[in-house]
Image (cartoon, rainbow, N blue to C red; front, top):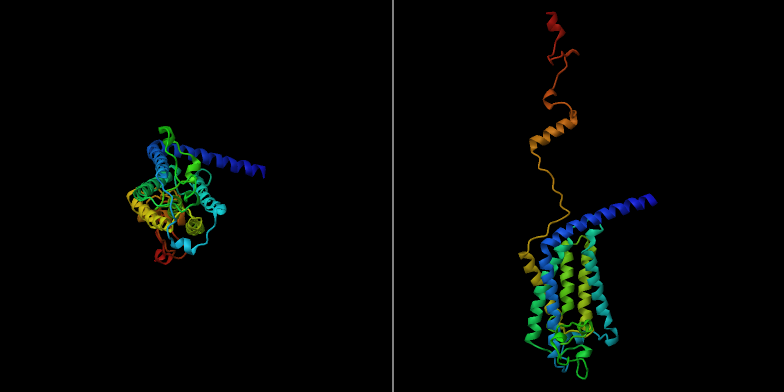
Length: 305
């Protein structure tokens, strides 16, 4: 048992080192795209914080989703956040599976370049929408009477550039487009294309539907925010995916091209012996049980005559 563990550990370590070498080479070529994607995530956070300064609380708008789905309440708002965190962590860990698993289909650096491209495009449209029209937030901390429904004006530029994690969870005004649904749908669509487990693909879409309903039931967004995210994200991902170069498939095995003549020759060698020239194997009919050394048939009756 100990020998087996040592052997498998050695194989795992070699696989990990080999993958590290490969990914470092890809990172050296694509680090600019990853850095740009991360900077855009920061800009998106600043934009969401900026609209919180100009948010004005008001009566909650009439919403069909609020009428159909029961309200979870402020004490159960953690449920949708827990589901989203599970989706995010699961997808993040899946993108690093080539470092540990033997069967792999993606490169971690390349898949994140693709995912960040999808996220940036969708978030750009999201920023345009919630700065074009500000709606009163339906969330509990965004309603009238809440002290955090509108942020006080900043006292310095540094305060504007600072992103508080607490403010990310309790933002107001960034509506018309659900940020959680952008991440969820991008992750699900990416695994739909590059994942290998059919069950996980179906389960991912089911989780996306559940996440949509939980967001509405938690009153974090209006129904229109979720609906717009569903068709916009899918459309954006479809269009960008057509423009980007396809990722190399690591499961493909390149086989040498062999001509028909060579194949027949190899098969003939396998059937009649590898060390003998196929030209030497000529059909020889036996007559009266005698064959001379040159392959010429001799007939005893003819010799007697």
